[in-house]
Amino acid sequence: MNFCVYKDTGDEIHGYFVPDGFSTKPIVSVRLNEDNQVSEIPCWIYVEGAKAQGLHDTGNVGFVLSDENVPGLSLAHNLEVSDPHTGLVFYRRAQPGQYIPRKILRLETAYVPNSEIDISLKPFFQFFDHKIEHHGFETIRQMLEILHQPSVYVSGRILLKNFRVYIDYNIDNTMISLRDPFYELAMRLFVFSRYNKYKFQFVAPRDRVLFQPVMDWFENLSFEDEQVVTRVIRNAPKDILTKLASPFTQQLVATNPNDPPELDQVTLALDLLSQFTIFDDGQEDGLYARKIETFLDLPHGTVQQKGRLEPVDQLATILRRIDRVHHLLEADLVLHHFIEKAAKRAS
Image 1 (tube, rainbow, N blue to C red):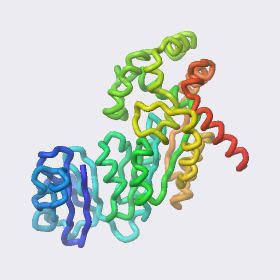
Image 2 (cartoon, rainbow, N blue to C red):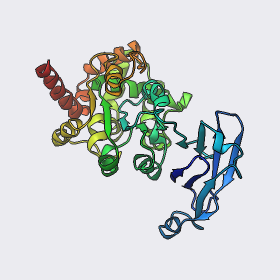
Image 3 (cartoon, helix red, strand yellow):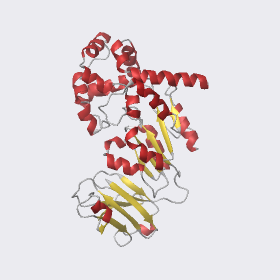
Image 4 (tube, rainbow, N blue to C red):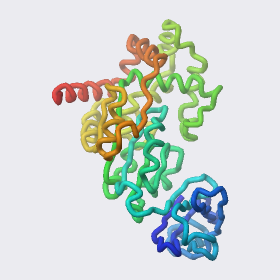
């Protein structure tokens, strides 16, 4: 989808909204003062670009909101405009000094997202969305290209290279945290081995297709039995295990989720990591949250972050003893090695 609110005079709000469906009639939802009552306004203004670029069949995607079609709009201190289909809020009315005037991307690298961090920061930003990997490319691009709102926070597990051009020219600051590669693999195995039964909501639709062979191979695996874990991994087909190869390096350098990272790409990954405003190596629980608080000048304890899980740590210990896992994570292990060396030099 494409969206923009480019003017809010108090009496009127001007913008456009292009839904995902080419022939879908655009409708925006408007909520005032956190009220349960929502007004749904069909878009009716012709926008040449939407028609000319093939984004919508009629081009009637523009809207003007006022007291006439949204009673009470001019007096509302709190106002939200959203997509009624997905619930995505793409505009919040801002009062002077209400939000942090920065545009921030937090690149999520954990498969089980650190949503606690994101939800902690939601009150401080005018535009906010997390787990953006659940959206399509155009929607993510639009989030990163927001021009008329100076306060933007987006977070998600996306392939960095596909969005660098938008990040470089419009995002002020970027944040990233890595962790022990064995721990991350253990977490992914926990999720994928149980997904067929529990259907975890944080698993993006595209991942359900991409990782289905992994989910089927490891389904209901008993992680307490080291011999069973070792045997299942050693016997796994190469094309299944490749989908789990060095996810940190892949996320930084790949353009396609099916592209396995190469060892010679570690240098590029390190260079990209050096360009992040905030980087955390994941060695100390809670340090990432404290770095974010300091950078944004927020009180201590504002940003929440979950700690490591003991059962996942126990599986990670088993994975360390399997040679095939070391080969699988080779690029990430080399990346992690250089990060640790840099941290020791810095300290």
